[in-house]
Image (cartoon, rainbow, N blue to C red):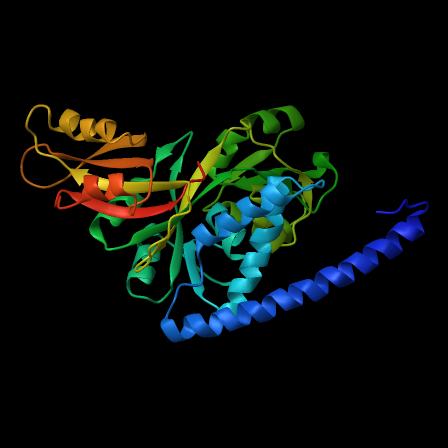
Length: 357
């Protein structure tokens, strides 16, 4: 690139590059439209996380400029989302309300212009997918501070629903108010757990008396704070955006290591191999001594790396019996994995998907 000697010259250059980017993106969308027509005829899936991860990896290896893999991923995930809506608009259900962290997770993969349906319970998201009212659902499965979401595991076990992708997401809280002066704020709305996770911020920034008012969701908190002077909300960034609530502070949580893992689910979906995959299964073992050890030995013998194992009450019969959630490296179509899972009625395959955490 030639040397740039003035801001005006730089702006002219940027305008020229932006025009070329727009032309290329429109060319891309024409190809996308053709793919959508072909998929519509074959009822093919529009969302292919394996393909998207392969594109991001390929572009990351090609880059020679200032864009690193994280920046490339952020840009192209939104391009992918716009592309999917041009191919074929598909409804996405998520654990609501609007502005929740699950909503934020859904938008991070399906983009801002998709058609979203917020539902009140995890069960209702599963039912929407199971009855084909939507093609995809987004639900939380675990938080690294609070642990596993049992409702999600129970429903994966009871319904014929597959895991399409995992979405690990840092949980960041913002502080919003229509008041610029903190001394004018006398009430703060949020969920009770958000108050706990942001206690240091509250203690450090509010020397005067302030009332902490628990509400049903951080989205509701943002809505209330946007309507009344003298109040504020601790909420998600997307909730503040949704209710046009001015953000005074970002990232006010006590711990920077607060992550939630979300799942994208579908009723009839199987990813192709991406080269870096994870598989989730549920297994019911007998109560005989050594049954768990013997089962785990098979993973060792097959050189398959286990990432997670957790036990859950099977809730059948009068005694105590358990099932286990296992997550491990590899794809169902890998010879070692398919052989391990073959002809075993005690194993329920939940999905193979690109490994992100």
